[in-house]
Image (cartoon, rainbow, N blue to C red; front, side, top):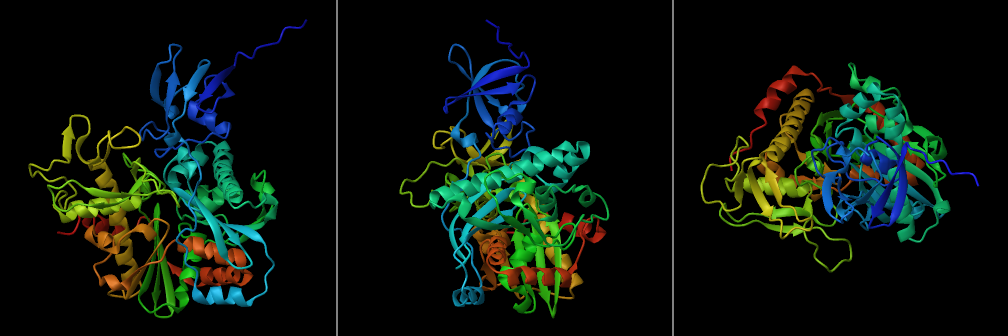
Length: 537
């Protein structure tokens, strides 16, 4: 009988609690090895061993569990690994997301005779991917899903991802595959929840910033990373899903045009849904995410710019940050500096059980920081106060000062939930970039003040305008003039999915916008430094 040859370059990993065995190449990184098997973990720090979100347990022969970050583990031998649920990147079906379509569009859809088909509208963000399952005959959103963008394996921001492609051209394919697999993962979960066969899907619209769209379509984004920061292409495109790596979904994918190297189809999509062309003079649309994208109606013209607000506002890179899914703290109230904080925690749609907190999402961070500024726990400089007796303001040798929101006994992960000085600095950088971008855009358009602000983005839809004003992220103005409009980029993607005329309108808008480039602008740098401080309470 012939002996079976054992491949000495392969190691077997037993996975718990799913009772699955996988074979991986010896000497490889555990996080990447799991990804190759479609087991995608959270990686808020881009796999640098900092965030602790890809936490796993290596189970020894005696049953002892050794806690590790999977991104720091090299597979040298057979092993048993337990993956906590909180470390998995999994789609959370969240019902109807805050997507508001223009009334005239809804009326138009009701009056037209459309065939009863289904499609997907995707907002491909740098940090978060939002997917909407849509009845294209009525523009009804049947369900939606929000997932962490696993491209964070290659860095939190677009420049890090461009750099990784320049270092190794194979990374372009890896980044594309991460986006495609994640969209397909979320789409299949939505279809299953709504009991719709995947063969019932007819089309998909994907919107995102220029780098995200280049990577998604497999186009080398390197020209976007060097001056003059020009995209390889700007026009809208139609692509067959199989050409870019979808395995189960077979449909046409539409992407909207890009305005410039930093302003893409996501802002166009939001402008479409906000009907920015017919908005009052002095209306500013702000789509807040990893990038802050701005479009201003001034007279009969439109002016747009983009500034790097960073991934902190979407929960990434923060010490206890997470997506806005069940278990995330999304609102914080602090009565005064001596009182413990009170919080609300997101729960799954339809769930009556109040979950234990697992971390804090972007809106929760802004809410908490605004309260700390108001109560004097955080000074205008961003430093924690030196005032004594604040029971939740703690200090240790390794982490310095931190504000404890929940202790480890109260949290779902067994880890304390808090904000540290580094978290506050990350928010300062983001809010400083956004308010500086707003002020420069106003000056270039010849305006002294804004008449109206529209806050967009899945993140923006959960923010309280008074909190943004409290930390100096948007100008001080009458609260009634600030509208929270939900995920307008997602709404515009739904419009483009259901209506060919909306796609044509996006092309027209792209050709009419005046862009302001803030990259390397000395005026931006000067004013940015001044805007890092918080306003006096």
